[in-house]
Length: 111
Length: 112
Image (cartoon, rainbow over all chains, first blue to last red; front, side):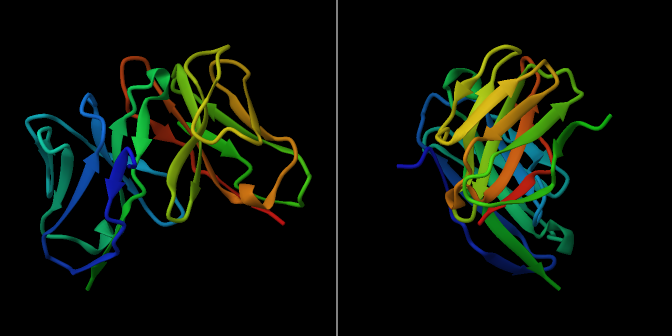
C-alpha cells in the first residue's frame, strides 16, 4: 500500500462549481499534512497546511479525519486559474526525510 | 531573495555521460532534498541532507551521488547516465522547526 494515495483524476469541472478531493495516508502516527499545488511544468508550491481542526483560506477548505486517515481539499466557486495538479503531502516520520508526496490529482476548470 | 535556484533548466545527455545538477538556497535552511518526478509516479526522494556535512539516501538513490558543499548548496551527480534517469529533477529546502518544503524550478533531463 502506498503511504499516500490520491485519485489521479483528471477532474473536469465548470467554472463556478465546487470540487473536492480526498487523499488517504497509511501511517496513523503522521502529524503534519499539507496540500501543494503544481502548475504544468512548474515546481510544487505550498497551497495550505491541514490542521486537526480544519482550516479555510478564502475559497479553499482543508479537513483532516484522523479516524479514517484521510485529508480533503474543497474548492468553492472554482476559477479557471485553479486548473492545476493538487498534491497531498504527509510527514514521513523517517527523521529528516520529512515528507511523502502523493502522485497528485489533476484538475481542469472549464469556461 | 531568490529562494531555491537550480541549474541547468534543461539538459540532454547520451547514455554513459556524466553531469552534475546544481542547487542553491538563500533562505538559511538546514535541510535540502533532491526529488525526481515521473508521470504517474509523483515525487520520489533521491537523497536528502539534514544539515551541512550530512547526506542520506531516499527512496530511489541508485545511480546518483550528492554533495552538500555548504549550507547553501546541494548538488546531485549522475556518474553514468541511463535512459531510465530521464525525468524532471527538483531540489527543495526546509528550515529548522518546520516541515514546509520550498522547491526550485526544476531541471528537465533527457538521456538518449
